[in-house]
Structures are given as structure tokens and as C-alpha cells.
Image 1 (cartoon, rainbow, N blue to C red):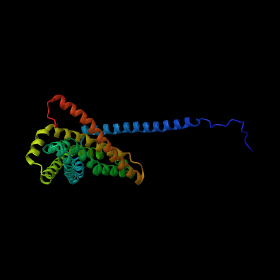
Image 2: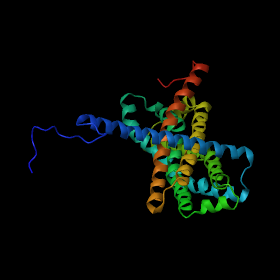
Image 3: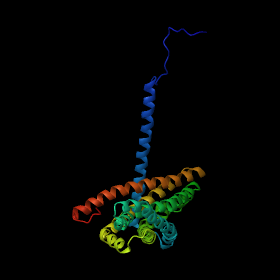
Image 4: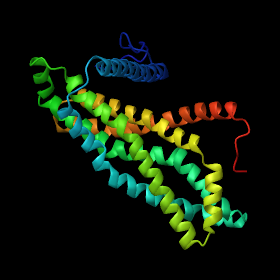
Length: 292
């Protein structure tokens, strides 16, 4: 039976029509994303508070802490040292031509070493730690969640956060400064070797300008930042592992999310801490030496 064209078209009950429905769906989708982020931030805050509380209640046993320290610190040294060395050399390669055109080759060491100890050293050490250790922690804890080992710990009276998270948190927090110093040292050494022996920059002026413009506060800034980076890596990675979804796909997603979120947190913290520390430094020492 043919429909009567004079009759009005019926609309589904409870739905808008045309463009209004598309706008409503768009708002609903973004609202769901915002709610998910807020819920995640709340759960992350609770997870962080529980981890920090256990630091003051009771520290883990030595047999639990030392293997994590070895895994996080000792096994990360080679990759951090190698990365720092090549980054120092790459900085010389990329900067030498511009400084030579300005007839400022003697200040190349000051610029490179300042960049290494304040920014690149801490960020690269934290990035390597997030990639090598953060993903591993998330995958390990995620597998324990999927196989119900974390639930078994709870049923036996052991607190999973105290037994699994706190040792990893302490390892990242306490050992990332040493990794940062290693990255700084190898980067400075690599840059010096490439600049002096391969670019024929005078070693006296290279060292003199570096010593004049790079001071103790610059080293402190890099190490101070690394403490926040290490804490963020441990908390984010362990949180993603604890909230892993079921199956092998869930473990893979947890490991990937741990690195991605850790890297974003590193960059955000680097920006905020850099602004804050520079403001404090130049307010206390307004006559501090500047490169130009």
C-alpha cells in the first residue's frame, strides 16, 4: 500500500532530527571522554595516595627491594649511557655549522653542556626508563592481574600495593638520579670528543666556557626534575598494570599505555618544573651569567 505524501513524516520518539542529533551525539561522546578522564584521574590519585602512605607505614623487605633495584638501575645503565653519548655527538653535529657561521665555536661547549644537564639528560634518562622499565612493569603486573595472582596476594593477607608497587616506586625514585648523572656524563664526554677531535675546536676554550656557564644549580635542576620523572613513571606504569583488562590484548594495551602516558607526563613535568625553577633561580640570582 502506497504511503500518502500529504501525511507528516513520523519521527522516532526521544530522538532529535537532522543536524541537532549529530550535535547531541558529538556532545555526548566528548562528555563520555571527559567523564572517563576524570574517573581515571580520581583512581590515579587514590592509587598514588595509597602508595605514598605505605612509605610511612612500613617499607618492604630487603629481599623484595633489591631485585627491583637491580632490574631498574643496573640493567638500565648501558642503554642510558649509550643514548647519552650519541645525543652529545648529535648536538655537536647539528650545532657546529651555525656556531661557526657566527664565529662562536668556543661557546659550543657551554650551549651543549647546558642543554644536556638541564634538559636532555634528565628527559632522555626518563624516556629510556619508561620504555625499558615502565612497559615491563605494566606488562608484569597486568599479567599478574589477568592470572589473578594479585587477588591471591590479597586473599593471603598481603597488601598488593605494599608488596608489588612500593619496591618499584622506590627503585624508580631513588635510582633515576644516578641514571641521569650517567646520561649527563656520557653526553658531555661524547660532545667533547666529537667537538675537539673531529671538529678541531680548541679544548681550552671549550672547557673554560662550559665551566663558566654551567654551574652546580644546573646539575641540581636536572637531578631534581628526574625525581619527579621517576615517580611519575613508576606510578603510571603500576597503575596501568593494576587496572589491566583481561586477555593478552589487555596486557599489551597496558604496556603501551604505560609508556605513552609516562612520556607525556615527563614532557609536561619538564615544562612546569623548568618554568618554576628558572623563575626561582633568576629571582634569587638576577645577575647570573647568560650565554648571550
